[in-house]
Length: 310
Image (cartoon, rainbow, N blue to C red):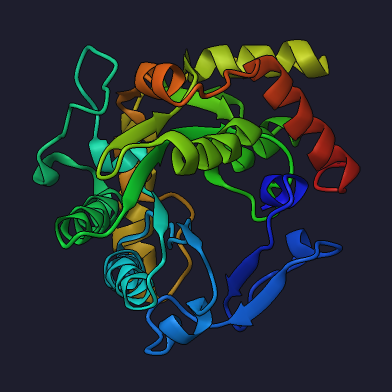
């Protein structure tokens, strides 16, 4: 959004009735209130030339299963139908590497697709089925380019995202141990630029992984330690420990009406090396590859300056 404004575009944003609008303060954008599943979305798209469909519900909790499919699958179908109805020229649909899945022993690229039943958790499955809605719309003649961001890092993470939460837990000294997992990480500004590049250069119906560097969690934590002067977690924790906690949280505590703290799907995901190959986007879209060290430094600075940590 900030990138679009900086390049002279007029921007209209769909905001939920009770959304946190902190990141919109001071921005010259037109706001319309609504939900992804509203019947009148086409009215709210009237007059727009292109659409960036970036909205999705993110949760790893089993209790949120219905909301995940309603927002991510039904919502995507509804948004794309509305865009078709009003003649939107081109849509960039934000999927996720979660929809692609993990390729054992290799970095997955756009040609790989995990069988949906092997995707861990309803969030990943919902993103897979949402991406299928985009492919169906392309078959109907709609001009849609699909982008699959990996794990963005950087400033303006108000919620925060799971990655931002990991950085915050490191800064707050709430991470004495770590799991042996791996992620593909990318500066959030490169993800934003990748969306605009997909609009300008992407091929209809194709998907592009917006990623950068494959790193183990230990490598990320060690880099945070170098940047901040804080000590890295002491050691690796065996997977059965958080798995036991997560099972107790979701099966026992949730059934008693208490709020769980560790999602079972999240622990199962963390047992995998979630590595991806962004070469297609780098070569065909000229996706930038900003230093991950800089991305982590900017994330830390933003959290500190906005009082997320002492």
